Length: 74
Image (cartoon, rainbow, N blue to C red; front, side, top):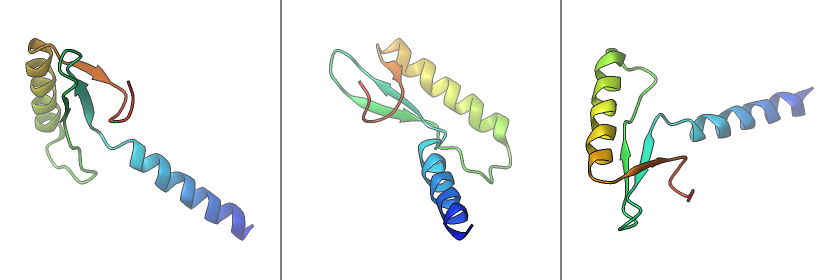
């Protein structure tokens, strides 16, 4: 029983670290990697954060960047 709880806590912590709320963008021509968005679980004005992230993504797409799964993915 104790091992199950400990394993559940570790698994939740690991999954939470992966879901950090960022959008990773990579420029295929240069290899440059940038991030848009840093959502915090206690954000008060979520719509403003989402709007700023959407604008960031759009700005980088116009420069040739493409969204990707994470910093280490291709």
